[in-house]
Length: 434
Ligand SMILES: [Mn+2]
Image: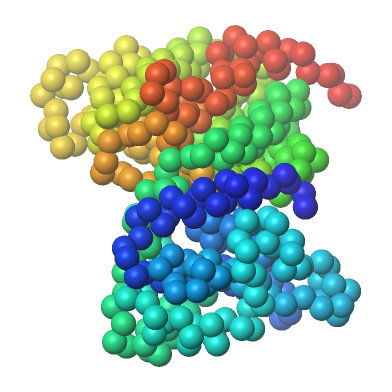
């Protein structure tokens, strides 16, 4: 394995948390993702479904988890199904989990081959009060493709039309939004690798480099440190491109005098990190670039301090908007009297800062979480304010990852330089390459 997995006791803890919210008599079923096809005999790299990964640690296709705490036979209370391996599979595809390996990793005693799933279902479904099925209820999901889970859910509901069905997604959003200690440690590993990649890039960038060359430096640093790569498609946007919020073509030449916005983060052991830094192509910010940079930095630092238990995310976002308003007035981009007269439903700051400040972070970069409840300890958020001035071909966003605690919020990127002067200092140490 490329990464150190979490311990079996942590996976047991994740399942115990799920069971706490499960109604009596419920039989919960979780499926892994499909391996997605490309063309001819090609396929995409496998990406495990986050929920089954959170509950078992099994990063393999055709995995199924049953949780049935009220099953008559204790052996049926937790069952893990893994794809049956063989010598032939071992020769062509490499090692898959043996039943013992799957047992050791997940902490689940009953491990069966996936081929016995149908028979097990026939045996257990008549015993349960209701089925608890999973689906993607992420607020922004928009899949045209049916997932393996959707497909299996449909089959099961057709097979047992008189069983009532409950949803596990609200439970998963609840338990995944509060990280266990080992999850935080894993996220810190991802963050440390991302930090190393940022330092590498600071030693690499100079006028004339292409955005994708910067991307390659980052990918190199990720892979050599045991990450499987980017947690999401990186944005390497120089000059005006920084004002294109989801710019991912990364194919332009970085020009002397421009600033590059870089939004990237590695995955480690399935967990995402999410960093944004902006650096001057030639190693020094102009006075105007520095002023905008420092304004964004102040917003980031003040927003971080607002991430405390008991706050509603909606109120937090409104408050950050007010801080941003103050900074945009300071930069001469907004007029104080215009702001005083603005329609509160359409605040003027949105012309320069048009996205949210924070999102949940975890196994998914835009992780699932409780958007309408109070912030709680052990939640991890990004903080990523930005100012985008198209007419100046300048976009600045600064993003760190923050762990909420009962006391002060902990900045998980505290070690990575963010002050403008510290970034310039890092860049001045770069090796001169002919
Ligand atoms: Mn982000």
